[in-house]
Amino acid sequence: MTSTQPAPPSGFPRRGVALGCGLLLGLGVGSCVTAGYYLLWVLRQVTGFTLDSTTVAAKAQTLLKPQLPGGAKGMVSFNRGPIEFAGVISRDLISTGHNA
Image (cartoon, rainbow, N blue to C red; front, side, top):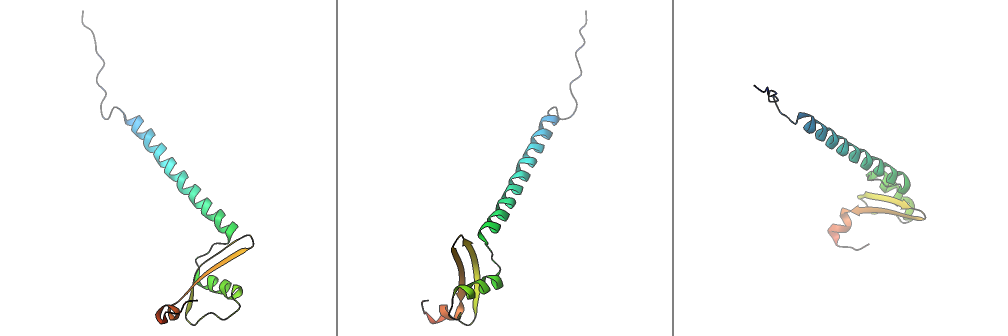
């Protein structure tokens, strides 16, 4: 009596497992990136967060009644309810050593 054994599988035997793991990894990374982008968008809408220097300088001008020093550049602004914040930097204040 001779028994017939099946032929060994050709190629990578766990190709399906590797493909499935790669697909799940890609979906996981993609969903994390999408969730992070959405969270950033929501935070910008809720807090009014911006890094645009012209917008920040304009907002700082409305918050600060006195004139901004010459050469002032806006860095960051956001608002959280009744609290508004605008960060401005001036090279003149840094070079002369004056504290605001």
